[in-house]
Length: 140
Image (cartoon, rainbow, N blue to C red; front, top):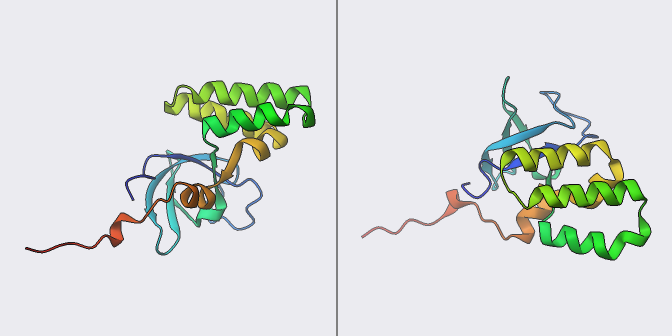
């Protein structure tokens, strides 16, 4: 699944069953089998973790997050507002360091995490990502 491979994700901090014990950690999607809802995530060292798309979190689209920040400013404390703006600014540079930094900020503030991240499952459906392994091949 090319569109997801290499994308940074966070293993949901409250995940109850995780064979590789990576709850709340940032990893990189190594492979994605959407037909079987199996996402393999690497963490640098150790074995790959295998997760369903509803166990992983990604950052919201930067434009969507900015809109949410501006419309929800009255409903959040100053620290959450500051953290969300910092996350959004880091998203302007989409390199791994900034995206990882944005995710770390979200992980440190549960309210910011709730407002800035979505489940990978939702990201896939919003972006209409299809499993390229299911593409039909045409023979001549």
